[in-house]
Image 1 (cartoon, rainbow, N blue to C red):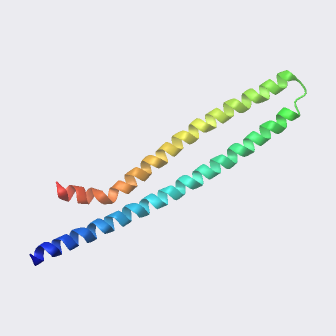
Image 2 (image 1 turned 90 degrees about the vertical axis):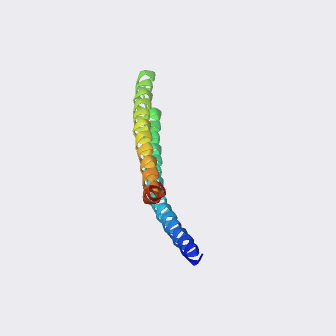
Image 3 (image 1 turned 45 degrees about the vertical axis):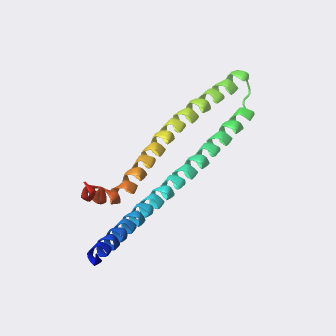
Length: 109
């Protein structure tokens, strides 16, 4: 019976250690995601401000439409690239969070 308690204690400690490693990996990746999102937001705001300044100084409607079209194209391409990058970061976070549990799952099988 004492052996059962020791085994349960050992399993509980192992699970706790694994959980803490997983949490640390998630925290690190969440920080990277936050930094990436902040940088993208800052860049998008700067690009939008620059496009607005160009629009206000446009001398003709044709030039204004050209500026707006260029900005829309640039904003769309930037968004798609950022969405792809964020997806990769989230996938990496999931992999890193699961990695500590791989050995526990393998032992359970």
